[in-house]
Image 1: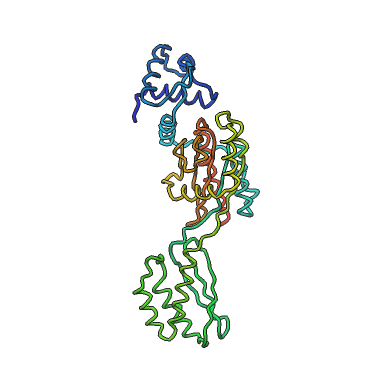
Image 2: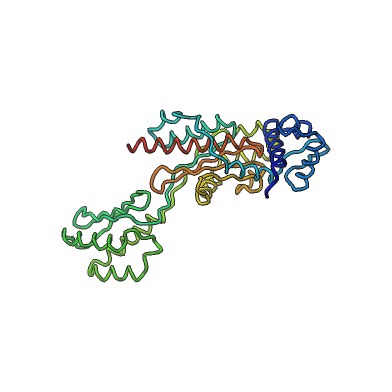
Length: 344
């Protein structure tokens, strides 16, 4: 929904003031907060219109107003369209732990929690192993063949095949050519029964090897590994009164400890990420039930071919969205810089 310039400036002022104080905002405060040079009466009329439109509400009998989820959504969408903030923070903070991925990602979670004063989650990179890149058959001895399967993301899986009769080098070469010619670049769904039948026919007496290689390819593409999750700053949630309800805090802390739900959040954010790699979930929009009173901002980072992970910052709905989005963009850039520094 488009608001006129004056209503938008007043709404921004209400949101910014509430983000800073956590207290309902009155028209007198807004008259001092903005550069509109409007009277309190005029601002009251505009705030009444904003309330009627569902952007602000009056809690209890307070004279002030607080933003609704609808207001936060408009604010975030408007902010995301603006020019990206200059990257000025966090430079070099990750370099000292770049040697090992797990140490680096733990450091990412800790740095973000300290920098934002919210709770953070970082998932280890994972790959969508959809397509086959390469197959290599190698003879180990007279009765064993090593099958090396390389899939997207340069994930490598090894399998041993037992054979009854030894294969000479020429036969091994022909089987390698046959398999790679027919299978390279294909997803599992594209490997049809007709294609498999044609390969078996060309393989002749070695058709059973083709069958076992197809099984190895299927396992390499489909195999799911446990997603590693790193968290930090869960206790930061206690700093915000609106999230300090005992049951609410208990559910949030349990979510961070069990991490299974966070793994789903990471996978979902990667699947849904747009061109910016940033997703913002406000209140009931959150895919995690225990975070329905929070805002969750996620970013997707990529460190190589098909290798993607997710970063999430969890805080109150009055979180400083500008800072959070800017910090996440910086972190994504730093991860990219570190990855390319290693490759150079």
